[in-house]
Length: 119
Image (tube, rainbow, N blue to C red):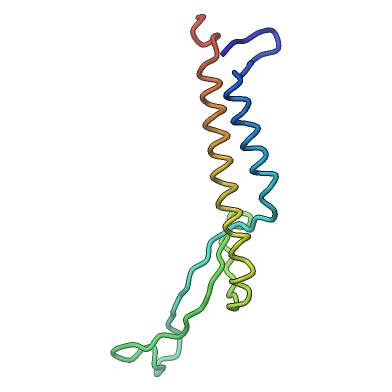
């Protein structure tokens, strides 16, 4: 790692890795944030089958959950929606992985800055 008046100069390997990460991000396509789970629930009716012993819960329901303005938003999906949205959720997971990788690379570059050791 070297520095000059323009700041950091990542080595060839770091630049190549950054280019690979940028290319992978640009190839992703749409990315849907959140997570999917399958839930079975109880209702509020006192004499419902879901309150029996043993209970017979309602569902299963396919639920997509995400954060919007620091609040949890939940939507129930159909099986067709799940099939259509799963690749988008996979893209969002991969995007998070790539951003983490880019941040780790950046930290390595900054940690190698000669100016940290010049003091």
